[in-house]
Amino acid sequence: MDKTIFIGGGGADYGIAQGLSLKYANRHGLIAGATGTGKTVTLQILAEGFSSAGVPVFLSDVKGDLSGLAASGSADFKLHDAFTKRATQIGFADYRYEAFPVTFWDLFGEQGHPVRTTVAEMGPLLLSRLMSLSEAQEGIMNIAFRVADEEGMPLLDLKDLQALLVWVGENRDTLSLRYGNVSPQSVGAIQRQLLVLENQGATQFFGEPALDLADLMQTGPDGRGRINILAADKLMGAPRLYATFLLWLLSELFETLPEVGDPDKPKLVFFFDEAHLLFDDAPDALVDKVEQVARLIRSKGVGVYFITQNPDDVPEDILGQLGNRVQHALRAFTARDQKALKRAAETYRPNPRFDTADAIRDVGTGEAVTSMLEAKGAPGVVERTLIRPPSSKLGPVDAITRVGVIATSPVAGKYEEILDRKSAYEILAERAALAAAEAEQAELAETQAEDQDAAADREFTAARRYSGKRVSPSTARRAEDAGLGASISQALTNAVVKELKGTTGRRIVRGILGGLFKGR
Image (cartoon, rainbow, N blue to C red):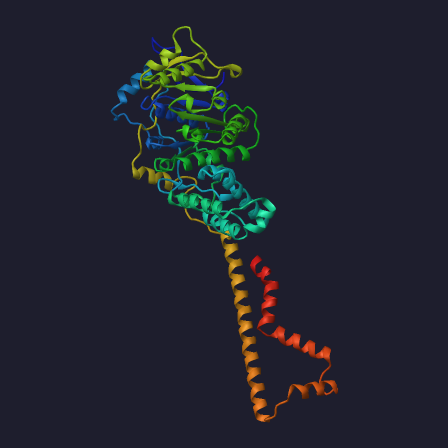
């Protein structure tokens, strides 16, 4: 028999016990329901179950409540009696309080280990989505990334991208001939959006050391999977950054992990809370990308679970791939709500004992309508389920406990210090400094030559005054005709050489070589 994660069950008015088969846990899932119906607790008990089975978990803590996974529940807790009564009612004989191995992460580095990635790893598509760029502006982003690759300029942090865009704007005429139109207005618009990202704290997110995905897939000394908790309460103030980061992480897992087929249990389970933020105003190309990743990443051993208020928040093509479902109550106050409720009910395999739509509307807090994949991946009959109580602490841990967990985690000290190695910003700065130095040397040489010309003129004037003689033009011509001077060709040569030594000559040479100075 396949190992399962116990979710809940029984009682006189409920069906058989419900469990999530680890063999089909990488077939993805959905946790849905209105605010206050118990989605967070369901996410918590699923994380506990996966961890106990040796499966690492990554989840985002939007409200701060899930940090309680790092601490054990307590008999002194005011809901202790209700929890033990629920455990007895549903036949959860193994119920006990315990803490779980947790690693805290935070994009801002305040409530966990810093999470960073490089601009190059994020790529032009996700960055354009993050900044809501137009099609033309996205095209310029692609040009910038292409130039960075060809010129060997690593894009690591925001200042790298900002410096490169300045260079693209200055060389737009040349780049437009090769890649297409580069308008200064579009470059300026991208720079303004990068400034917005800076104000939202993205400067701390882009850089090195970048997140090593292997650090998200660790197990504890006792074999339990580590639960990676991303502090997202502050991050939700920049919802597009939140959604783009999670999508980037999902894409990196897809591109990095090897194919494993259908393992006995997942290698990692990824919970995407507030999933509607991923799809709000998303272009079709991005939705298609998410659908592709969701469809194919299961073969990499990764299960993806979307948490949202209404199943309608998830596009239909993606919703059809979510085989394991926990549906908490949906409220139907309007005609639109009634239609959404009916659509949600139609996605379940019906149970002759009750009407699914009525059950979704009527279940209380801590209850849900559930359907899990059974043998050969077939969807199970929908059941009304009492959700099991959590073993870890319900609610957030205190600041002292969080600091202690961060200090003793396996990655303590690995990401705290920022690295700033040579990249596009430094390379372009060196080129600018070199060009400035060469221009300064050229200007100095010109000044020295002008001084020498002036000195020669003064010497000539002084010598003429000293001799007291003046040669008339007619005398000079007669001397030249008589062979007393240089030949005509020699005279022309001397004149050209003298002119090149002068100011005009140096301007001609600088005009020829100026392109090289600029190119540097």
